[in-house]
Amino acid sequence: MQKRSNLIIITGFLIFGTVVMTAQNGTNSPYTRYGYGDLANRSFGAGRSMGGIGIGLHSSKQINPMNPATYAFMDSLTFLFDFGASFQMSLYNDGTNKQNDLNGNIEYVAMQFPILKRAAMSVGLIPFSQVGYKFGEAKTSDDGLLYSESFEGTGGLNQLYAGLSIELWKKRLSIGSNIHYLFGSITHTAQTQYSSSNTTGIRDIKSTKFTDATFDFGLQSVTPLSKTENLVIGMTFSPQKQLKSKLYKTVVNGSEIMLSDTINDSAYGIPAGYGLGISYIKERKLMIAVDYTFQEWNKVSFEGNNDAFNNRSRIAAGFELIPNYYSQPYFNRVRYRAGLNYSNSYVKINGNGYKEYGVTAGIGFPISDDRSFVNFSLEYLKKVPDIKTMINENYFRVTLSFTFNEYWFFKRKVD
Image (tube, rainbow, N blue to C red; front, side, top):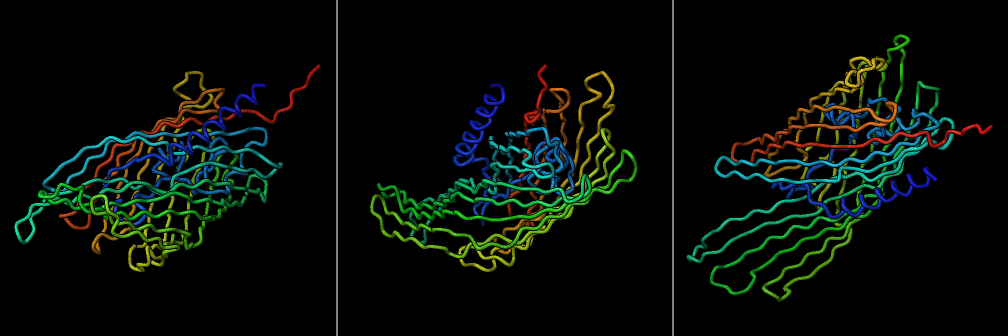
């Protein structure tokens, strides 16, 4: 009965997460006007606090869709469920104007369970990108008329995934793959309003809807260095994909529709991606990890434009420390985490871009005999543009996640 109740609750979370993530707007960045918007961080729980690592992350107590090969390393008697939400404060500065915003997000919801002795499966919902901005200014035309221009964007893409992992060599080598159902829509609206007009002005609306399937693959190997120490190497690959899409273009003058057009499959693509992660683990004491990812964005098109993007590199590093796992005092068994990350923007803004620098820290609070965790992370992210006239962005983000780990497949003996 308890297992059935837990399953109902978790299924409810999945449905709730699907609805909320589809409707949410977790950013106000003007840079999301370009491309697919801000790319999401796919790391869960501990990895989020460690700079956003995941490719070389090796843990039987955490779901890790960044590398699907990790699923098989879980305990064959347990069931995992993970849910995360975030809150952030954003600060924007273009050298003249400043703006502060508050946003909140459902970050992810996922579950993982064994299906065979050396195979496990994970399903969940994770974000791919977010779009959210609104800005404008007053202008004067050549003939002296006052008018205003405003720009607004909403939407984003999400991924409903299912992953399978198989352990090829017990506790040493595993492979895995995720299939993602990519879905969502992005809408951009530009409006021009003349002060002498009583109408709502001219609105140019461009909305793109995406639905398609994508894949990624992973491998992870574990090399023992001693009885309590391991070296873990992980690799990931995702192939380039041309997305199925529908582009809706509408021009409205007041209440009159001047143009309405639909374009199918207007050449939108996502790039091939490669990842390498290495971690050193001293069991129940220390983990140090480094990840590197590379995405070939300059080989894909966006709305038919073959020069819309830059290749993107990201490097992240972090550590987790447990003061004394076998000690009775609770805070000696708490996980203390910190990390750094750096990446460049994939979008081009008039030929330029920006760099991202991040610092993270967090704590993992063990519950339920140290099987389940409440994870708390803090992140500071700074976007530094290539030229001074572009906008500087600073983010302070708090993420709270719950990792539920229970013995659902344990058969109790009855006398």
